[in-house]
Image 1: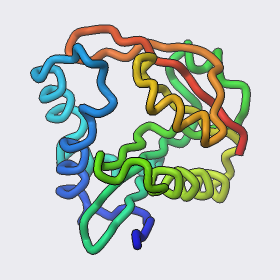
Image 2: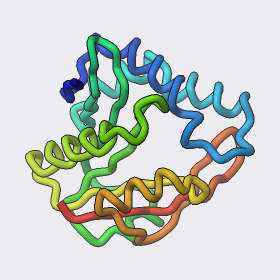
Image 3: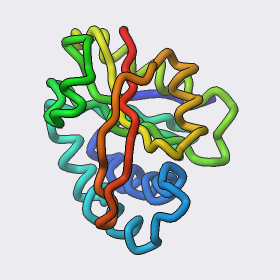
Length: 175
């Protein structure tokens, strides 16, 4: 049985390890190893997670089973800063579900859905009326998952990964 809880600074090393185990799952198939390693180092390293956990504008939730993290989400509060996202989002106040990752061995068992439900509940409790996220247009599995969670496509944006401009869909749902 997993426990879904708000992450603490003590979780930073385990979050970095989990990010290293899961980030590649969300990348387009032609993403280079170097690009993935760069993103893990510059965005999803332990020091980054320490900063995210200290930021009052973010909340991270983890799915913990016997002291092993199997999944995590990160919410960013406040309005979107990307002009394409800002133009696409209709529900305010909103939160961004910036990260939603579950270890491959836990896919299909309901853990991701439980983690997303807990994430959206925390967002509601903090006053959000909507949630949005970006997902790579080639990540069909993630798109299907988000649609099952009530998200719908409202726009698109770009995402820089390893010097390559990737295309993301912007998805939104009412809380």
